[in-house]
Length: 99
Image 1 (cartoon, rainbow, N blue to C red):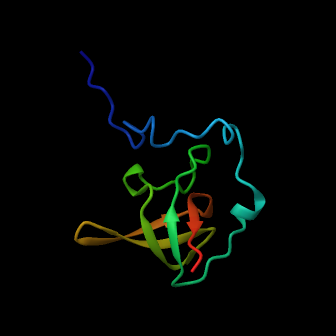
Image 2: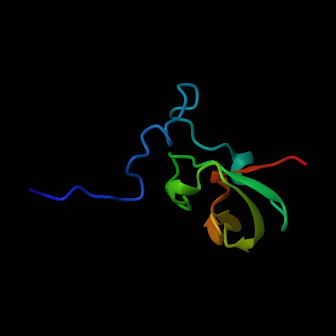
Image 3: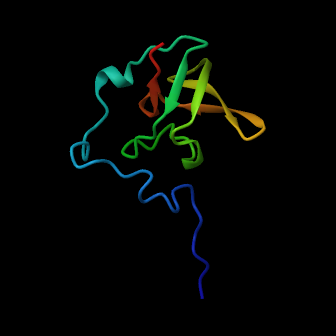
């Protein structure tokens, strides 16, 4: 018997599924060129068609704060239980919260 793998995307069939209208769509340029400032609040919404800079599925739907920029990605501080985690996420996986 072979052990089944437990990779980053296991048990994520419903979580990372796109609606029929979104399927096959590549992130728009506006979404890729999103300019976020330090201290802004964002929601992590994983785009399953873009694998680079994708956070772990446990962070899907979490709200975080932008700490800074690292290359094309952003450093996002997210509270998970009692701890605060710093994630490095590409802008395709972030939604800006309008204040």
